[in-house]
Image 1 (cartoon, rainbow, N blue to C red):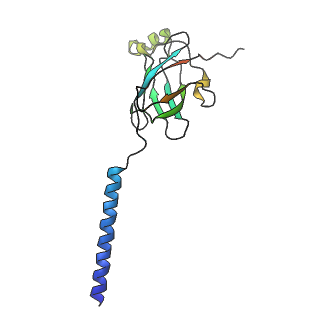
Image 2 (image 1 turned 120 degrees about the vertical axis):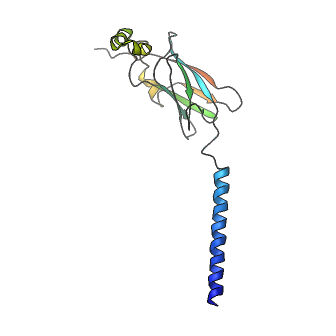
Image 3 (image 1 turned 30 degrees about the vertical axis):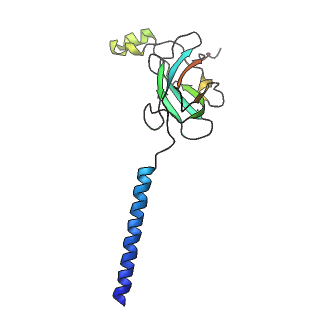
Length: 163
């Protein structure tokens, strides 16, 4: 009798283990890490036409969910990624933020640092701080799952505080 109970318990344990393994394999093969993303690229420039040469763009979904972010290159171009660099964002409506953590170097400052820093010389303009706050930024876009998602954003420079 004891061996029959032990045998049944052993069979149940194997059955539960096998079921859990099958469920885990199905979940891992069928589950993805989030919503499908779509490539997003574009440019950022000031209202006077000069490109923004440093900083980041961030796409914040209005419906919630993960944001996408991309570095602004010296040419003013960017590509956005959510889970990996340049993998895009999910389809939907976004408020777009443009941030700069430090102003670009003046050509004189870059020359003083040496020729290896010449590519960092840029406009003396700095993006207005309003573009760094999702409540104040007026930059918006809709990312589509059925067409190219290339956006051109125009920003105003930061106005220095008057003394």
